[in-house]
Length: 185
Image (cartoon, rainbow, N blue to C red; front, side):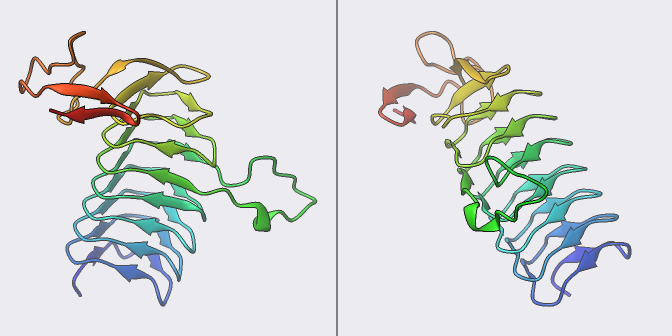
């Protein structure tokens, strides 16, 4: 088998799981889920049908990745963070035809216990702080905290906060502002 799964994990027939991926205790991967290579899927994770998870993603314990969520490569989902997929759910009314797509772009970090309201995009290398509630799109490299989430700065590809002149004091990368957030250079 090209991937590892703990004996308590449930992998529905048809799920596509990439080489080198590790799936841990009490996790359920649904039949039409697609998971890339070299991912780490923690304990008690649920991956729904029609979910796409890129290469190198790390999904910590107690995360449910619902239909409509797309994780690009190298996304980090902190423990117990939350995705939604229906904006205004009701128990008595079936609304699965109203799923809103949520895209988390390459290299983004979603902190522990944050909530991502469906229909939003989290930019490349953005950093959503622990407990934040995201109600709108997050630009590339933005540092967002609070409820509702608000941008308080910028972060480098290496995850360190940038100085006011958009230079990383840790790795020395320099950034410039673009219409999508920040770009290297």
